[in-house]
Length: 356
Image 1 (cartoon, rainbow, N blue to C red):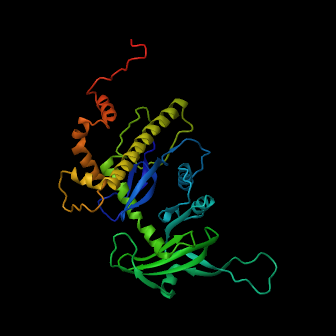
Image 2 (cartoon, rainbow, N blue to C red):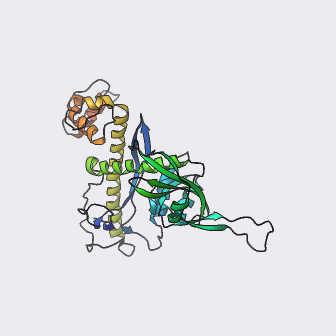
């Protein structure tokens, strides 16, 4: 399979290998809240590693995710919630150029600077930009922390300590809002926001919703089968185990076209899975009662007041497909379309205007 490469995965479980062979995808979704329940609805997913088509292509994963975000043509500014890998100059500059903002996490070993004091008597040369240097690990010992109830999803009755400070960060060269959090079970964490008007508790809450993104990705893998494709390319040259990117710019035109054709098949399969998952999440939001009534199975913790997961929606749809295919007047055209694709009925050719 083209674009398969060696990937490193971090996990606290010893049952998972540190290095695997697979496809590396970047996904952008939108966090949607309905009646207190949050879904991470996937919008787009692309394979951004594994195949290099041109030796002049110097784009990184940061460049590609910015292009992917711009392709969505979202008219309103957004907050992009990402992990610490994306907290760098290129990512922040690309977002702020379009009026968007980043919420991320930074290492406790990072440093920032207070703005330089303006001298009463200006001196020759360029004015000093950076003032006193601050290490976050030291700031945890000296900062004046405030106590508050944790705004993180699912943490009821948990008290946290937090401190907010706006500092100059050299990777950006601008003022950035940092939130230092001392959590009773998760330890000390530093969050970053490029929006200086966003409150500390809002930053903590939004970053905590990254858990929903992980849940959505787990559903796409194990329930929807978005990434369960096995499209082999017979003419592909074999690769070694734990190999990296496949460079095809020096291959024949026929070989390059075959690789791109196979990559297109991967992308279409992933896109269909993204659409299917979005539809299931929509049904969970808008038809909660009907979904639970059609579930017809057993769960240890069935709570009808909670929005059902994609797995529950899929089970309900399987249980009700028979009644749906019986057809109502409103759904007759869709039922005919499904039955034709299943080969249960012959396509009906409509008569022309001549009556022949």
